[in-house]
Amino acid sequence: MLTSAMDQPSQKLNLIDQIQRLGIAYHFELEIDEQLEQIHKIEFEFHCSDNNNLYYMVALLFRLLRQQGYNISCGIWWKDLDVERKFSFARNRLVELYFWMSAVCFEPEYEVARNILTKVVSILSIIDDIYDVYGTLEELELFMEAIERWDVDANDQLPEYMQACYQIVLDLYDEIGYEVTRQGQYYRLFYAKEAMKKQVRAYFAEAKWFLKNQVPAMEEYMPIALVTSGTDANGDIISGNGTYRNKRCL
Image (tube, rainbow, N blue to C red; front, side, top):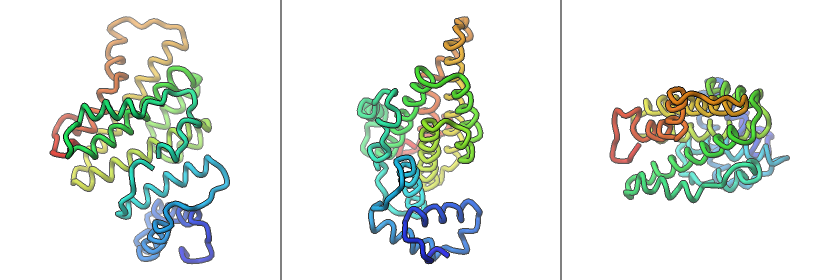
């Protein structure tokens, strides 16, 4: 099936993804290995019909190849994913946030943590701007519900610009799952996802106050402000909900 007349790597990637989601990939292990090896060799030189599909295919390619054990650079989603165009309303803080994370995890052995945390705070910055300056209240609620579901099928209910952001979140946390599983600490992924859900709920609370012209009491505002500062989302990735920190800062 995988070796039949599918000339486009994008078609093969979609089929592999569907086979894995159906839970039958063990029937096609050899074929999947062969096809991903071929795709890896051509170094992403495939064609897509539009930019939105290009984004999806790059993200899917990254996940499938990393999942298969290939050494793929983590830096392929930011320039290739056309963040500046897709989120023109958002602040471009990638360099700033990398320096911030370099201060948090400055030791050489914490390279993995620096890269992942930079991506997490970068996508949080975009989500923050969506909630602060761009989305309608209805759109913001839909995005919060999609994050709560944490399911690729929830993407269909979102506006186009939110679909790109939501897919970035899912693929980024797939990458986090790969790293922590490789270290035998898969439990950390649960806390990382819960922290992101908590973060988005807090962003929504602030946006609702603003869009409804409401001023919360101090005791109502401060717990939300503590979350929107980003300490939960970053801290839970580093420490696994504060229970453990190993030599790789993950």
